[in-house]
Length: 593
Ligand SMILES: Nc1ncnc2c1ncn2[C@@H]1O[C@H](COP(=O)(O)OP(=O)(O)O)[C@@H](O)[C@H]1O
Ligand SMILES: [Mg+2]
Image 1 (cartoon, helix red, strand yellow):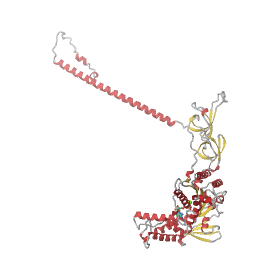
Image 2 (cartoon, protein in one colour):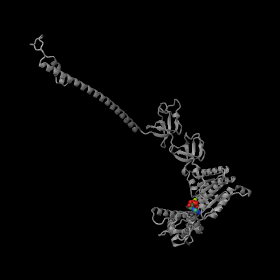
Image 3 (tube, helix red, strand yellow):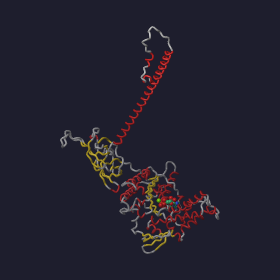
Image 4 (cartoon, protein in one colour):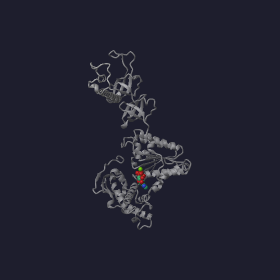
């Protein structure tokens, strides 16, 4: 169309202007000019055609562009909408959670002071603050019950319900004051009055139940499942055998007589009309095998019962004192009840049951000693009630173990209760050798230097044990451990051997074996256990026990040296280079820890 844009009319050229001089009847033969003109016209038409095609294509293109534009616009609109939604979402003021105390429905026709009809309102607690608020249109205050959790908007109107609070503090139900009010006790013995939440209403509650309390709203939300006795009690038969215990033959026999005989041969006891002991207390310094013995006895009874065939078996309830004590107020008593009720249940089914209270002094302290938070004032009676109740039942035997039997309430140890008391002492040198023999045998990898001069590995091991125990028990200057000054002014030196225990011997053997293993890994030096491994292990064990005076107590040392009644004024560690003087608090026996 450039042509038309040029202002020239192409048709003008097609129809030639007739000159005034030309005649109409005179037909002119097409001349050169005519042909030229026609050709130009054809050219022109072709150009128009091309222009038309171009225009068409452009039109099509722009339609396509239009469509694309439209699409982009739609997408942009969507994105804007999403952004706007996000903006609204992010700038929404937070809603508060509140707990309903009551809803106030005015009687119909009631007016406010300002003369407008009274509206229903709701009393709620928001973050510990009590408020009277209005309900949004969608919420009917009449539907709200005390204890319901609701949402408030920024104007503090109730706008909807929310899920109930699930966190809080655990307290123990002490008393039900009225159908909707409870007296509960928290940690530290602080009492509180709480309200019953709808979730708890109608549930059977009894004193001692652990409840979840939302302290801010003051509602008891739910009764939490009681921690199962299973957590403190292991019913499996332990895998410790008598063969693993060294140097305690006499003690073992006493325990077996007291526990195994009546359990395995109740008919004999019946014939001789001898009532079996109800309980045995194993006491003595730590690490000397009390727990080990109790487990071995349980294992032995278990095996002997299993040998009888059929469904004969035995039960072992292992109660770890400190674990049971870590529970909430009232929980320890409940768990003791539960332990015994489980024991009775099994015994009633005809199975012998051993109830083992390990570290029993942590639970049954002398009442009124003020050592712990006086929990013993309720735990001890609970235990006594249970153990006295055992009388009616055969087949239940209680074994207690303690490092500090002097702390145990005397009532527990009276005749008819844990009246068989067996002292498990520190091993002397001979017993120490017996313990070593449980851990060291001829089939262990022994170094050639150790075997030299012995006719058999067994003999080599015995020689080794003899030497090592000699080293441990020698009253040499390097084995001096403590100097004790008694109140009377007397001084006494305590040696390594005075603190010896099965646990220490087990420790020495482990250390020696570990050294040998490391040497074996680095492939340097001799392969197998050497004499030197043990000497080093003894030294190391000795040095690490330097801390002993901090952890044990003077009373224990006094007993070790056979001067139980005399007070200790001070102790001095001799094991380390710089000997330190340590004053000792002189409190009446059983009143420190
Ligand atoms: N007489 C012993 N024979 C063998 N190992 C012992 C002996 N006494 C203690 N041990 C070792 O010491 C560890 C602690 O002994 P344990 O019976 O728990 O002491 P506690 O008297 O404090 O209950 C045991 O697991 C065992 O490895
Ligand atoms: Mg123990």
